[in-house]
Image (cartoon, rainbow, N blue to C red; front, top):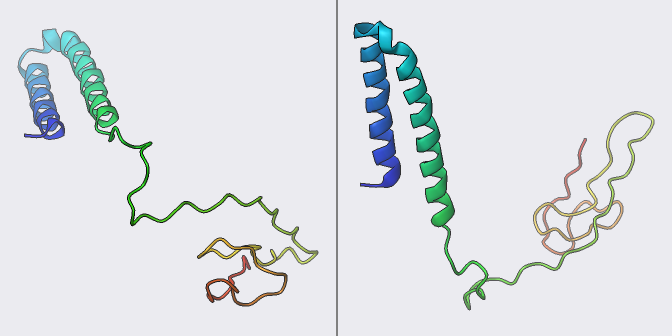
Length: 119
């Protein structure tokens, strides 16, 4: 059984036991609240610690032969300021391939997709 499923089942049992103690033994309700809070902290920490250790150790290794190389980082171009009418201008790059678009282009010269605008 997976750790998350086990934590879920134990958490449900803790909640049911808390309700039973609150109904049958109200004099112990203060202790049960602190135990419930402790269980929440323990279960969250166990859940997040399992996510931290589940990452692959070879994340910095070289990509596989079929993997594409990362795109070179291009300088960010600031969006043109909106005109007096308050409508935004065109987007200065292609949202599909991230290449820069020339001013007034309706299609991306690199991939051929239509150039969207913010307006």
